[in-house]
Length: 195
Image (cartoon, rainbow, N blue to C red; front, side, top):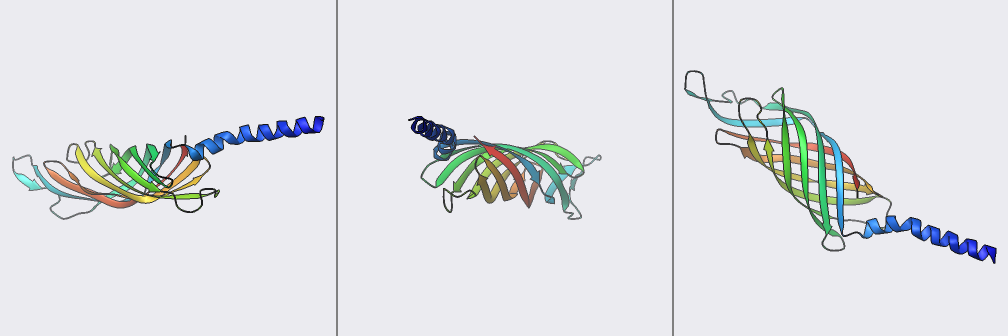
């Protein structure tokens, strides 16, 4: 009789302990936080500025490509499971952009589409993703705030409630009234946690 009660209690304890793990994998809405780096790359710019004599001059008259240095990044994502393997979501990222030997905040927000591939019961799950965003870079180099269309193509590797993100990240179009700028593609490498 005592063995039967102990067996039932241990079974009940196992089920209760496994419920958070089961609930997480079945949850339709997931929030994640992540932190990492953007790898070095190239920053391109074209445009004009007014010099000290009041004349309009080409900002990049010698067609230089400027370096984009290693930059730290943090982000927040919200994903909704639309179908058993398809997720749509929104993201917001802040990067301490290191370019032109200066630093400025690069704030990016947009939408993502992700697809679970492989077995859902596997210890490691892969979720390829495509993201499109709109970003703003604070004053840097010789120009004021610039705005960008951003693209992200990569994958999330999920183990339990932890994830690693590896993606190609670029801003193919950007600038302001005075300058046209773009950068990338660069690699974005981050680790994070799902909630």
